[in-house]
Length: 497
Image (tube, rainbow, N blue to C red; front, top):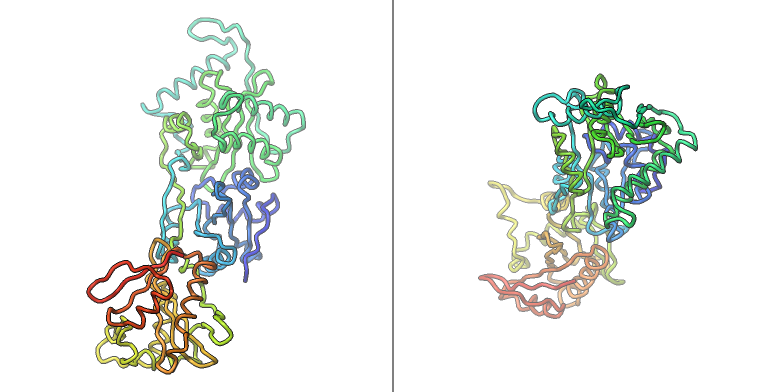
């Protein structure tokens, strides 16, 4: 099976809604609204693994600088199969390094089982702020003292009929109401919302903006979701004063959590934000436990504001990078070196010959690995022992063994091993005696170096040989490897690819 990605749209979002909600983990990036708002900017696409059961993989160009896709953790009951499909897709399309995005720590821990060479991190600017909804309903306790004050002041200034604050009459008459919308907005109201968003953007970023591109884009995304929010069963709250819009909030309920996707208020109204937050939380106090106000995008003013509401917890979203591309191989391919030489996986046909090579102590004097060191007790290895060893080493992302076939005859093996986090590998080759002096080793290693560079984007290859092994030393020099150093046993070489 090959992953076939298509554009994400309203119909597909509704189709995968249950799967998204089931696997949400309180992260806003897996909500319908966020995926819809960002689908074009980040070119979010979907590929179904099992369409009947709505199992799928998402990818997005979160690495805009390099125009490169990153993958979400699979929405699948078979994670191994899904990871293999992602690996194969990355190899075929040369998406290097392979990266995952929008992960929680549980996702990261699972990915560690599939990749031995990795780096993961989170950026504080993308962490979601999670609050207890009831804290916003009551604003109870000393830590919320100023929020209670703001709400009370807002009510005194704008909601009381007398409009009295500290005994002084407010000259301007206010008529504030909050209206809940679950159906399509008429064109007039939609345009009024757009005008309000434009004013909000101007107040926040200025006429030109302040280079916070994603922040500015988020305001434009807001307009797009307002056109279709009802198709995703979202709820819009509009606050008006004498029919003039002064606040917008777009809400999505996922399991026990309320996601407040749009929180835009005219801050000329003293206390409007805590009042609006309190109103929304109170509206859902019997339906949710948590209130997600999403991330701060690195806006320090917004960060201070969200911290002032005392989050119950922060949900960090991790990025995960695979550091060695050899670990992306899900099977060992058959490769044509030239008309006479092929590289192929170990199979039943060459199993016995491989066994004979593995136990040939004369041939393996300079191989660098004594199989007997891994035997247990009086264990006597047979061809199945070596066959399983090679298979397991590959599955465990430790070694990749190619059998060398010369004119339809077993010639030896090429091993790629010792993968490192700098995306480098080590190469070893050994031939049976009758296949020496046929230029096989040079042709095979030359070919595999090209394959590692062009197909897997491996950064560097390493080789080593016993100091006494002059033949291997000459081969390595002929392949243009650079001498690095010598230890007590080996001469060590490397080649930048």
